[in-house]
Structures are given as structure tokens and as C-alpha cells.
Image (tube, rainbow, N blue to C red; front, side, top):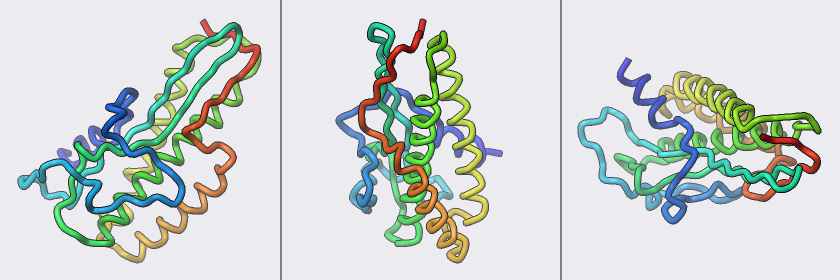
Length: 184
């Protein structure tokens, strides 16, 4: 139960973050051991903790919705116990999963048409995406046994890369503008 609670706390959506400390997900960039800067929690039975989140900002400008979404990793709140390429890859895939769900949020936001919406609607959409991401991440950890099952880890890594590729038109960390949308 503690592990499950810890999991949800660690991988929960963080809407605001310290921009100076975060690493924004970028295709081709991979996490390194040096990216984990938090002091090691020696009492933890985990091999690593990654502080990850989805940043979402929006602005309403005269019947238009301007928004930006991106996945980030916070080095100052992340640690890794030992140098192990499987463990590092496992944490990278968690970061990639955050990017997948960031892209899914972009995809859903782009579906908004000329109808009345509230900020509550946008928040609820975020919550739905985060809930899906939490379940997906939990399944990933369960099937890979937190990187110990190397065969499953490799299958997940390949699957995540395919999913990222399938959502490439919804890349994050860029500004989108939806015109003629009513948000109140």
C-alpha cells in the first residue's frame, strides 16, 4: 500500500514547476545519471525516484484559446541509487510516458470546437489524462518489476517508442492557438 501511495505521489501531475530546475522532454535527449541531483533517500527500497510532470498553461485572447503543454523532469527532486543502465532506461521510459500523455492532452485540446467551455472543462480534461497516465505508469512498473524484468522492460521501451511516433503530430513544448472558441 505504501509503495502504491508513493507511486501516485511521485508521478502525479504537477501543474506548476520550478522552470529553472526542470529538463523539458525533447526527442533524442535522454536522461543521464548526472540529471538525478536530489540527495539519495537511503531508507527507500526503490532504486530511483523521478519527479516528472505535465506543464499546462493557457490564455484566453478574444475568442481564442492559446495553450502550451510539455513534459518535464525535475533533477533537484529526483535521485538514483546506483549506476545501472536498465534502471536509467526504466526512468527514461517514465519520462517518455509523461511525454505521451502530454501529447494526448494536446490532441484532446485541439478537438475543442466552437462551443462554450469553462476552465473547469479544461481542468477536468487534464485530470482525465493524468488518471490514464497514472494507470499506464502503474502497469508499466508492474510488468517490468521496476526494471528488473529485462525482457518486459525491452518490450515496453519498444512499445513506448511506437506510441510516441504515432502521436508525433501532437508534439509538445510549442504554442497552439484555437480560434473562435468560447472559454469562460
